[in-house]
Structures are given as structure tokens and as C-alpha cells.
Image (cartoon, helix red, strand yellow):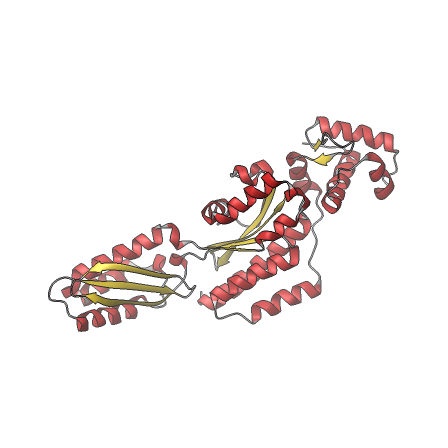
Length: 345
């Protein structure tokens, strides 16, 4: 949609004033605060045109206007001024990550804290999935004469336990031997990099235990394909309820329902996994009906050229997009660097 320069200035002023105040914006406010060089009457006419174009809305209880989803979208795409974080903010982010370069679980928790503290919005981090992070430990734990538990632990802190059948004649010593071979071939590898050569070597070295090898590979494949291979961390959930928009009880309930069902949030955030750059979805652009009053700012973080997770901020549509985009961008870049170093990619 093409706007003349005056309409662009009026729309940007209304969006930014509404973001700051959470109050509908009138023509006199724009004329007084933004000095566009035209009268309130002229601004009022421009606002009427913008409303007719679907970029502004008029709450029934107010003479002022607020941006529509379409207006926010135009603002983010063409009118928003990109900002850089202050040197102090950048230094604080770097220092936090430098303290946590060896524990990925702690790294994710620090990421949540950074996102929340610098924006005061709700933060989400997706992944890394089990298939994208190296195996830290894998082995078989005897349970009964006919069963054992396969235990998998990844460097990202993912833990899985699965029961498998032990064929007759297999002793505890055999299970410990199998565990040693599995560790030798799989430790340090990501499951999505498990080559046919490695699988062939497992079968050759454990030829006597073919049934256990087959069950192990089937279990690992199932773990990678299941939803539990992706984790979602949520922080600052109650901060979004501090926003004026969510003083409405129905809107608050909708958000609280999403917080309780992290699977829904996981699906919304994972839609953008693998895309480069910061993604912004506004109101009705979100898949979930309960997010129609929210905006989501997200970015994929990487291990080299491989996408391994997503960082995101969830806030009201009246969020400070310039700040949110800048924070997500810096956190994604820093997390990608640190994650690559931790995993040894």
C-alpha cells in the first residue's frame, strides 16, 4: 500500500504515541507533540483517510484512533526506525553469556532472563531438539532378566529412558559391553548425523546382539521424530498481564490458557524455525485465535548453517517493535555464537 509522505508521518506518529501511552490518539495530540507543520483539522482529515484505508481504528468509547493490525504491519515493514541497543545493554548481554558457556540448560535460562529483563515482555525459547545436539551419554541399565532401559542424555540436557526387551541368554556383562560400544560410536555425535557407516559398524561389532541394536536404533529414531525432541522454555509469563490490554478478564484468560499449554506455544514459535532474520507476526497473522491480541517477534538461532532453535518475545500488539526486534536480533546472534562454541560445531 502506497501512502503519501504526510500520511506516513501521521500513521507513524499515531503508532508510536499509542505504543507509548496505550491511549487512543487524537489529532490535537499529534499536532502538539509531533510538529508536522499542519493544523489539527488537516491531521484529522488524514486520520479519516487512514481509517478508511483500514490502517486505523476508532474505539467506540473514544474520539481518538488506534492502529489496526494492518496499520501495525505497514509500520513494522516500512515506517519503523531500526535502533541499536546501547553499549551498556550490549555489554550486559555479553557478560551474561560469557558466564554460562558450558551448560546449555543454563544458557537457555539466561537467554530467557535477557529477553524478559530488556523488554519486559514474555520470552520463549524453542529447542535445541534432541537430534541437533551431541550425545553426552548412552547406555543400557539392566532391569530384569528380560528387560533393560536405554538411557540417552544429550549435551543440551535432554534425557530419555526407554524400555527394551533383552533376548534370552544375554547377561548383565553383555549389556555393559553393549553400552560401551554404543558410547564409543555415538558419544559426541548428533543423532541426525548418525551415518550408515556408523550403523554398519554397530551391527558388525555387536553382531551377537542384533535384536538389541535394532531396538536401540528404533528407539533413537522414535525419540527424534517425537515432540519431546523439542523443548520450549517460557519466562516472564506474568509480565504480559501487566500490559493494559490484558486487564480485560477474557483476554487475560486466553493468555493464561496458552501459558498452561506449552504445546500450542511451541507450534506457533516453531512455524518460523529455519527462517533467516527477525520475524514479526501481528494479531490475526498468528495461527492461534488466543494470540489475536498479541504480537510475536522471533528469530532462529543456528549452529553453523544448521537451525537448532528459536528465540521469541510475546507481547501486546502495542509492543515496542523497534526495541523488541533489536533485542531478539542481538540475542539470536550471541546465542548462535555461544551455542556453536559449546557444541563444538
